[in-house]
Amino acid sequence: MAEQHEVISKPFSDVHNKGGKVIATLLHDPSVEGLDVALYMDGSASMEDEYGPRGVLAKLGGVRNLVEPQMRWMLEYLASKDRNGILRVAYWATGDGSQLEIVGDLSGKEANNYKFPGPQYYGKGTVMLPVLRDYVAYIRQEVDKGARRGLAVIITDSQLHDGKDVQAYSQQVAKEIAAGRLPRLNFVLVGVGQQVDEEQMEEICHDEYPGVGHLWCHRVADRMEEMAELVAVLVDETMTVAAGGSILDDKGNVLKVYESRLPAVLEFDIPAGCKKFVLEVAGQKFEQMIPEEHHGHDDDDDDDHRPALATADPGDAKGSHKH
Image (tube, rainbow, N blue to C red; front, side, top):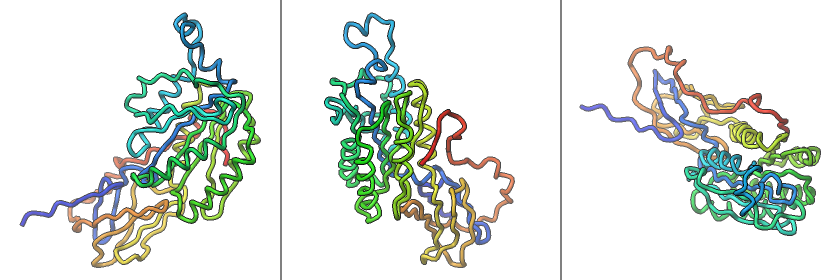
């Protein structure tokens, strides 16, 4: 009789059963499954020099658009985390400082084709609350399309004019998440340059909410050229499974608990007759059938070849990372 082909389900890449001990290798970090990302770039007047001249002046050369290459890099990188590779992109703090100019839903695969000349109307202030409202409204719509977690990356070069309002609204968002009316959301705030109020950023990011923990994290870049790298590091740190996870058998019994970060390879014992297990992490459940017992040679020497979850080393970039 032909051996039944085992089916490996995401987020696993390999599963073995050795005498009642399961060894399951993760294909990727399951906490980013169903992630929907948006990128909001500061469009206030203080950013005008960073975008460089437009129109005829731009063709004369001499002054580069420092933002555009960073935006392209971030778009491509963040799209690799996104569930469909398409990001909501907008300029914020435009017009009177409280307006948004939506650039569009942009594909990471076409990142190098997009132009980012800056907003049509540079803002006279830096008001962030409309960004949060826009993203929450957006994610509510995307839940019906498969979004199970949200991440908004927000770039600023100035002090916020509405820090207290941002904190109050964040508290409302946390209550919605805790009640199950919103998926898990995270906000990554990256400050650029000398005009950033890091003390204000720390105050926002320090807040911890019942049943949710931290919603915010931040970093500060000295120069625009460092921005994209800091975003990548901070997003990787934020998206790791800080709360760990649990393994359950087919009857719902807990077989193993990972208190901190999930390792790339999960090893646990299963009771006799157990046909499947469930990995529960970040409020999501991933079910996997257990293959027939493996009777081949000992694969312990293969440990060195097992893939690790991709995480960035915070030491790879400058800046401070504080909740």
